[in-house]
Image (cartoon, rainbow, N blue to C red; front, top):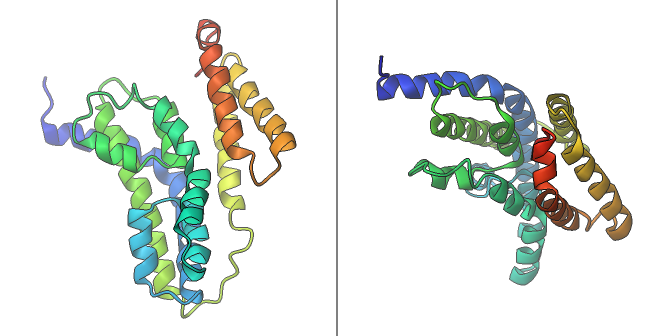
Length: 238
């Protein structure tokens, strides 16, 4: 029996929502902290609300506070933004095949491709009777709403709460450790995990903690592209 469009959308939402629950916890906590941070830095609650919708880049939004308070320097801001968000280029390359034939949803999926959304959409085991396009869309939309609502609440409550935001990024680090372990358990062989780990350590030693991210991403991309066929042959995940 053929499903109606409403049933297809509902089934995709019901399937996507449980995947986003851990993201909700992390995004709300950090989003509220970000909103409070913006408020105590002298910005109206409108700023974190708009920035969480338009920029939608957690680490970049935190750094954007100091950028807005600094003298006008567009070139430095552009370079800093590119360095911080460059990893999204590699996320996009990895999702090229998955986003094919998605119609109008493709544009929002590209815009909303943050770290956590990428992790879910790339690794989720979607049932055959669930529309992949709508599944990706709802994961992206829900994660976006979590971040926006957290930032909005934090901005509104900033005048009432004194909050120290130092160290809050550990929440996201812990989340990625869990995602890494889950991915490790799914793989028959751990070639891609070892490539990522060794690349990260090597680039950290060579380039230092402030500049290792982009070289690491390039190294991972080159290694995975070079060894793609043998990894897929052995049952690894690329």
